[in-house]
Length: 110
Figure 1 (cartoon, one colour):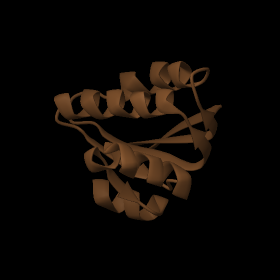
Figure 2 (cartoon, one colour; figure 1 turned 60 degrees about the horizontal axis):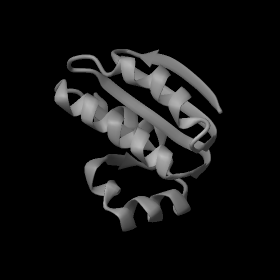
Figure 3 (spheres, one colour; figure 1 turned 90 degrees about the vertical axis):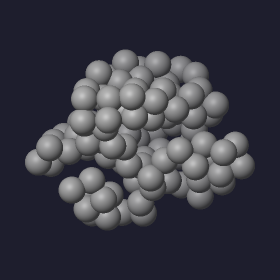
């Protein structure tokens, strides 16, 4: 799992690549959750994530809750079709704002 965190204006852009599973989800959560400060704007770029297990879904839900509880905004970008379908079937997709491209995600947070 590769995690790259950059800042675009006041938006934290977190780009993940690899698989998010029981082995890697804790690492992602450890690095990403501290960014969910009051009124934070977080863009999670998942365009290079090829697989996400239930541990990854739990990590996303934790990030959503943490961000929402602090009046922040979270946008998911670049969901692979399989991940999008899994999130839709489980009802997780209803919690998130999603965009297809990085630019559209940034625009949504501006």
